Amino acid sequence: MTSAESNPSINSLSTDVVANILGYLSDPAEIMLSRACKKMRDAATIVIVVGDFRIDSARRYNALVAMRRALPNTQRKNALEEVTRALPNLQRITIGNLGRRIKYKDGADPDDAQAAKTRRNWTTHDLSILSTFSKLRTLEIASYTGLNGRYPILFNFPLLEKLVIKHCSFLKWDLEMISGLPQLKTLICRDHESLRGNINSFRVLKDTLEKVDIGYCYHVEGNFMDLADFPHLRDLNLFKTAVTGDVREINENDFQSLKQMFLPSKVYGGLRYEFQRISDVPTFVNSIHSLVKRSPTLFASFTWSISQSSPDWYDSHDHRYRAPPLCFKIVHAGSRIGWRWLHCEVNWLDPEPATESEEYQLYCSELRRETSDIGMYKGYHQPPTEEEYRRLCYRFGPWYEYDDSSESEEYDSDDFSIGSAGYY
Image (cartoon, rainbow, N blue to C red; front, side):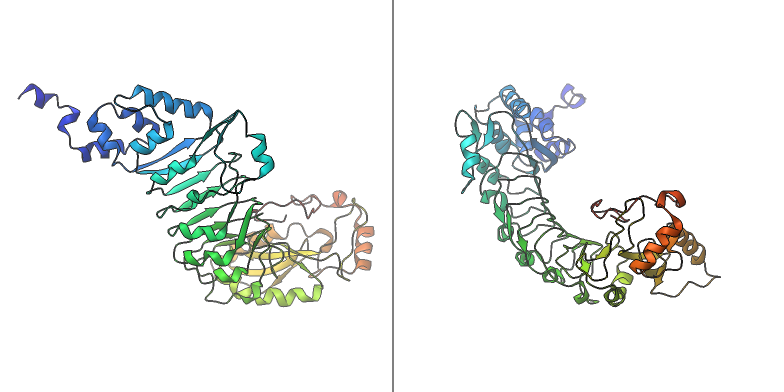
């Protein structure tokens, strides 16, 4: 056996094999550092890089510059340009804040006041270099990156599957730009006041879209039913948008894959929707019964209430007493479905499981847990009148004197968190 056979070098391997080896490196920076010879540099240009390349600080940026200078036969150029040339198959990029007095070049139609703050003595970097990454699958724009204006380049990736935009107050875009991302499956862009458009722009993504989270994007309009026939849509968050609609219009063929949704209160039956009369509630709950049965998690985080402008509404006028039970939610105990006003008895929509069935024990256990907070409203299936409520308060006294259950805290309509399975 020759010395070359017993000690094979990197040059004895094909470029494809070296590319497969580099593919096991999770950090693109490691691949950059591994390009110590022509064979490895050639392999780096064809490897599918699934790791996240993060540009989120000046220190990170300078580290990339140092890496570039350490590599042989490279030109002295922008570090991001070097990565673009060396790793054209990069699949995931995160754009972050570069640090003090370093920013990305302003886009079209920037906010003038913001642009004026960074006009002098700031180092700028051009994001148009990203257009080289035609195989990008995930793009994340981290919080407070300083992007200002419109950047069409960010919405022109034919293979992009996931776009995440976090707290970029001056990044301007509208939903029509989504047409430049024909393979998009996930869009997350919460709390973005500069986002505009109508959700019917998502129609071009009907066959790919799986998750839309644009909660707190106050200027997004449309009717949520425009997405009803999306076959793969599983998660939909439109909370605190200007979207309208009526959940009673959802039929058995709509939203077939949907597991979780958060609809704004402008939608009839949406999250925190306020009803005008107590008598309207049973009809509403019955109208969505089949939908809840089909998708039990769909309204898991919803509660609804009676509007303060309703003639049925009244207040406790004394924080020592439990607030009137003027909000309600869907109840699940085993497979049995019902609904109840806060701290009141359950109004069942389904029959009780047979006592000899395997499910009955689970049903009883979950029912006990669900109704452990009833307290002074025992026997009430709907809110008491204001007069009855005052009488109950006088009889039972302050809530903390008689209720030692785990849910004895005073209800606060503003104590709310999306994704919570309980009251908010």
